[in-house]
Amino acid sequence: MKLRFWGVRGSYPVPGLTTQRYGGNTSCVEVRCASPNDPTAPRIILDAGTGLRRLGKEMMLGPFCEGKGEAHLLVSHTHWDHIQGLPFFAPIYRPGNKFHVHARQRDDMHLRMVFALQSDNPYFPVPFDAAAASVQFHELTDDAKFEIGPVKVRCTRLNHPWIAIAFRLDYEGTSVAYVTDTAPFRDVLLEHEFIRQPPKPGDPLHPEDAAKLAAMREGVVRLCEGAQLVIYDTQFTPSEYIQRPHWGHSCAEDAIEIAREAGAETLMLYHHSPDRTDAQLDDLLGQHREQLHRDGIPLDLHAAFEGMEVDLSPHGLHVGQASSRSMGQGHKGQPGPSEEISWK
Ligand SMILES: [Zn+2]
Ligand SMILES: [Zn+2]
Image (cartoon, rainbow, N blue to C red):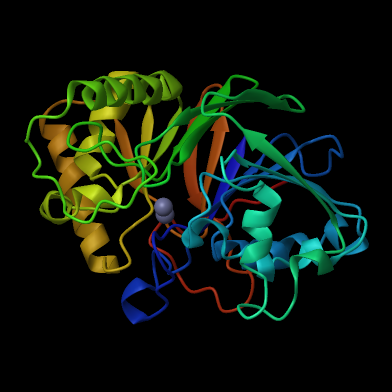
C-alpha cells in the first residue's frame, strides 16, 4: 500500500511563504494498492479537501482522462476542509469515470444533497448534476465495515462537532488508520450542537457523557491497534486546546498517547493548524521526537507535508517524497528526504 499526501492542513487553505514546505492545501490523502498498472487495484482517496484538485489533474494523465477510471472517496465528515476540492476535481466531469463516495449517514439529508449544496447557486457556477461521471453515494454507520476489492475498511466515531468518522484500511499485511477530526475524549462530548462557551478542561463530566467518550476512545484505540501507520488530527498545541476544547481537535500529545496505547508503529501528525508556520511545525516535530527518544518510546514520528509518500509493506514502512514533476507544476521543495519514489 502506498500513500501520497496532497493536502495536510485543517480548517482552510493557507498558501504563502510561511507554509510553502508543509503545504497550504486542506485534507486529502491518496491510497494506492498493488501496481497502478493492475486494472483491479482499487484507488482510494481519504477526504476531498483542496488538495484533491491537484490529485485530479494527476489522475487525468491516466485512464481518468479517457473516462475509464474508478475511485473511492472516503470522507471523514463534510466540513469545508474535507470536501471543498470536489467541485474542482476534473475527473468527475469526464463521462465514463466511476466514483464512490463513502461518508457517514446523516439524519436530516441524503449525502448526495450535502455534496450537491456546496456547488449550488449562488456559491458555484457549475451544479453538481453537471458532473458527467457516475457518482454513487454510500452512507455509513459509525462502526461500518466494508470492502473495496481486496482492501478491508473499518470505521469508528470521533469526537467532533456534528460528528466525524475515522477509517482503517487493511491490505495484504499493511495497515493505516486515518483519524481526523477529533478532540481528545476527556473534556467535552461533541455531538449535534454548537457549543458556544468552552467547557473548562478538567471540569467533571456528566456520567453519561463520560461513558460515551470512554466508548469512543476505546473505539479509536481498537481502530489503531497494531497499525503500521496512524494519521491523526494534531491541529492544536496544548495552550491552543485549552482555549478551544469545543472545536473538536487534538494535540500531538493526545495522538501519541493513543498511538502508544494501540501499539501503532508510526504516527503522522496531520490536519495542521492554518496558523502553524513551516518553522513552527519543524520545531513541534523535533521537540516531540526528542521527548519520545528521552522516554525510550519506540514510536516513529513524522509530520505530513504535501508531496510526502509513504510506502507500506508487511516488513515496514518507508517515508519519502514525490518528485515535483508528479505533483504538478509549481511544486516547490519539501521538508522530507530528497529521494524520489515512483509509483511503479
Ligand atoms: Zn477538518
Ligand atoms: Zn471538521
